Image 1 (tube, rainbow, N blue to C red):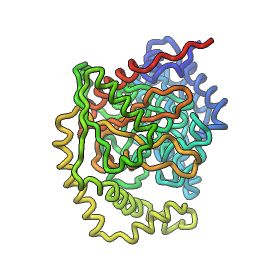
Image 2: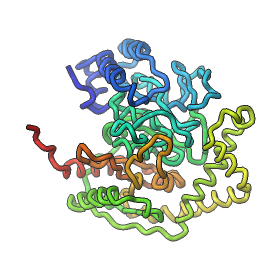
Image 3: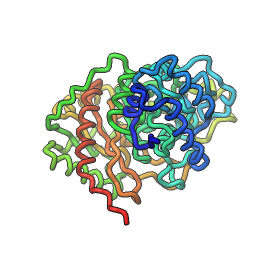
Image 4: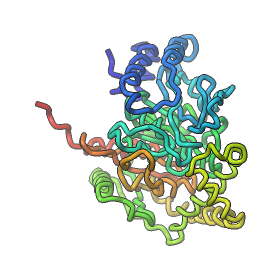
Length: 434
């Protein structure tokens, strides 16, 4: 018997394609994990074990040679799916059963993936949280709107999962739950079949068990994605603290410093990046645009069902109502101007490093902590990766964020492979038992 929670999605798909294991065997393994742990984690909003078994059984008749053959995947509940309702964690959509899959869900099926179910999100992928718990500590939040996908990954329910990010909804849960995550450059993956929140920022993203899993998903979801050259040259990295580094607690700061030191000892160059003062306004401009676009995207729901919206969402509408058209336009112009300033700053580096989050997962399920270190780079549509830092068994996860130049996604993933290899090699060996 194989313990598939010791393998990444890349290995599992290779095993299924080569006939070492069947898709049914893989599915049964993960279904057992869900059955034993889901009552505590609450990752799923819709789950059909028999449907999972049927998909795995049918695989040999259709796409058993796909890149994701037999790999179970969790789908965030803001993606349309034909075999599960799509509810957006809102009572308004309790009976919403889409007639077709979202674009990326179709691509996953075509590649042989087995859809495990729909994972909990926040209301319309915004702020009002669901019941999902962090597997590392059930009293702590798993993060923001991709919480169910992240917690399900960390609990061992599936080896890859879909999320989305508008501010920090992918990278923050990855940091809190100790996962690899990739948010591609803005506009690279079609959002057809995903309910919009703030179209200037909304981006498809995913979780994996390794950097090569992130690459595998990119090959499936981004047709024509450039091949990685797998060069092993020494790299040049920037390290950017941004204007809100005072939000970073001592434990996270020490973990990041240790990772930077490991990279330097391995021969890579890491230089401090100091941004001009005008970048301090990026956080507020992102929030302003997010509020205004969110209010427009959900105006139908406000008009028809105001009594079914959360306090958090109503507060967003209130802030948007106090923002003028000219103020929103000015914020967008400022970000566009700063994007041009940022481009040459990135030029000397293979990637810029920083904190994914300033804290570890906070206690409680009602609030998920600041997304500032994620949304700063979201404001410019740049590709982002979370690398989970090595930790002892009692420590909560900490994430190292890697940011690439716009549409330089393949090089960022290649750099992430090298960074991850250095950090794993530098990790202390586990203590011998007994």
